[in-house]
Image (tube, rainbow, N blue to C red):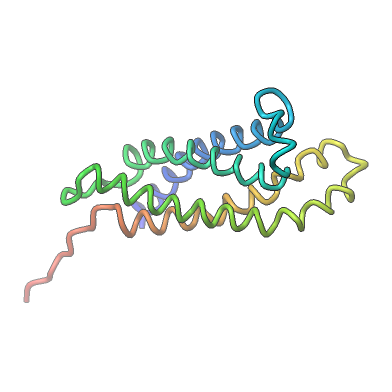
Length: 164
């Protein structure tokens, strides 16, 4: 149990680093929408679709950060799995997590938009409302990531058979 708790703590630390990368890139891309190199997109792509593009880009960068941290510090590598296969499985699980992430943001975004008016008097809170779906998605995908990576990527403990 101690080993599992230590692993969850390490997973949390790696996850926080990857999440900071994810959220910062996402916020930057969403806030840059309509200015600079993204200015031309405002005519072509609705803001809601841009949020999905931004989350795909930010999530993808954070997956690479997460892979490096997870396989170096959190999970014990399996001897029977090549690094290519390990990375492939990690990516497949992460892409499934990205699908969950996008689905959650897609479903929550229209629900959160009207709440911005509720917080209109508090400009700072209103300016952060676009992050609410991202925060919810992050926590749900976090659970997905830990459970599936532990199941598919971690070296299994050798079972001790008691001799009679």
